[in-house]
Image (tube, rainbow, N blue to C red; front, side):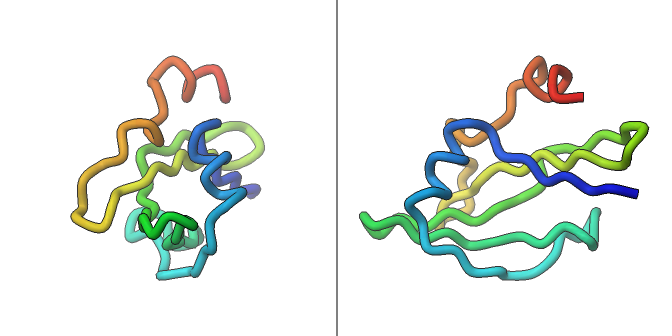
Length: 87
């Protein structure tokens, strides 16, 4: 069964400039590795699983970010309609 981990467009742009380090795995999806991302300006974002959906070919996992204080980074969130269109 295939597993696809997906970030929204804003988060994907962040990943292009960040230094990333694996910090563990998702409690709900143990095969999903989660990362800590340090940006050039010093900000740090940590991934969390926002949602997941089963599809014929496997599972799509939608990942978003929290900041160092544990606040959700709103720009990184998937819109419900965007998650549905990815399926």
